[in-house]
Length: 288
Image (cartoon, one colour):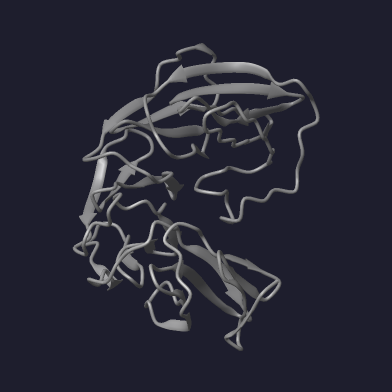
């Protein structure tokens, strides 16, 4: 994996792309901050979008891959680039810093880096490879490794603040969900119903709910609001659940599982890959 930055108009852009199996990550910042993500397998594919806020986690601040802004200059001007090793994930941008995982290391760069191979602010060795994008929130950055260990690090120094390892069986390709921060709870997809872990400082960071022995999927949790209630949609191996992130109590449960794809919540419907759309509140499965 490599990291690089491009400049367009008054914006700086974070980009992910790959060439013949190699992955590249890029990120940039200015008076208005821009992030763009792109993934290519086997050949170069480039796609970008910009935003005036941070892009601190998987699929952006609302976890839906959407932004209201657009790039106003083309072609992009590269600002910086560096190699961080092999990986499967996108970068996270928050608080003027860029987080990228390569091999078994978490790298932190300044958004304002420049040139070829700028020095990282810090590097932290992880317990295992990761399939998931890191999450930056509240002065911390969270990483969920494929061996089931969740690590919370200080964004300023990279020091490990706390770790917690789930006890449910590791799936065939390792855990792959990106951490979701909901209040003082970190939600990850482990076990058949997801897992909520207490993130309150200083601890003890107990598992609050979930982490059962049934099979895990590789999807990430998706937050949404239904009526006045904040919920999280979790794609399990055999079902989709909508749960209260604080307690894990299910609001809805649909028997339509997919191991790899995240659900999508839009206009009062929960879209389940390979199945169709579920009307929230009725539980009726339709095909849209």
